[in-house]
Image (cartoon, rainbow, N blue to C red; front, side, top):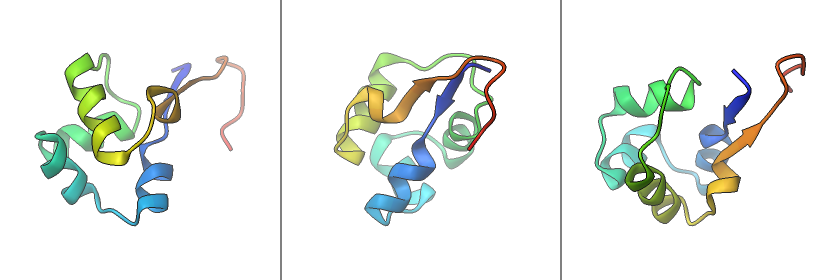
Length: 73
């Protein structure tokens, strides 16, 4: 998928666990895992806003576009 979610990067920078972030955002750890692993088909703006608030970041820090031919890394 050309949209990449960089939650792992921000979690590491903030020294925060997936469980802690899920609790702060108000979603289940399983739903957060679906989002961070790139399997989500959509993200509600309210969820995106809650993620940004919890991680003290901008939406562009969480989401980026890669062409289908780009290599991960």
